[in-house]
Length: 399
Image (cartoon, rainbow, N blue to C red):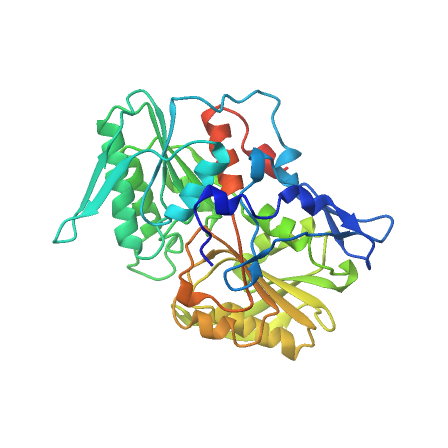
């Protein structure tokens, strides 16, 4: 579900502050910033007031009204006064996810910079900045999502244009970092493409990278420039606060062994919920075979957590196993929705109560399905950009 970019439409969405309004219900999870707790009164349920429906009828977390912050950002707000009229801060958007860029600019109270991006007849990319950036702190908003090579090359040419226009600092804001899965050699004669892409971005002239939920944390070490790594987890946790889920019924599931650390961190935020692991063996790229389950899910609500969903083979096979093992409901949560075929068929087959993603990658209208929920990370990225520009702490957002 691609969110509309116009401020007037966005402003009509739910205010995040309503997430803190509560009414009496059965025991459920309550969120305090990025941390979670069980209500001592045992009667907490977040009351989400309308309007919530959008597109295919599923709710979406909005860009923030009046530049207010959700609870996980409010708790980490720095004392320093931010000059929101700073003319030295410039935002430019590539073509990969213009809607998200518009939302970020709206949250920050800025206009996107004027830029001309076009393709020549042979496919070559042309970029021209249509306003001066000399001495400015420039942020280029461009995920390297499919088509990955096109969007990556566009980002590199944008960086080069800013460098040659004498920008003081150039930050590549990459909500989704493509090639991140090629982060090591698992067989002989393989490329480590994540390192290659990091070198390309650095050599193009970027001074800093801001990325969201890298596939593997070690990818930050591939860059020879500072990397600010932000997590979509608090956005998903805020949304889960709207669900009436008894904490004793909840189990967090890692769809593979490689995602255990991510799932454990997520479970810790959910009142230290129990953890289960799906053990699988992969016979080739995008081909997975589920072997067995480590942990107890019988009669529980299982929340599967991953950084991305590509063909959905891993998460769908895992969900089928969870149902076989007696799970009552299965939710899928991920930051990046790559959704390569046949992902939509697998995700909409009835295995999942809900598939919760963020808009780091734009979701094509053809990929909508009833169980899909899209959350916006615009407020998170917008606040991070302000903190980077003002030399304030970024990590404090997630503490």
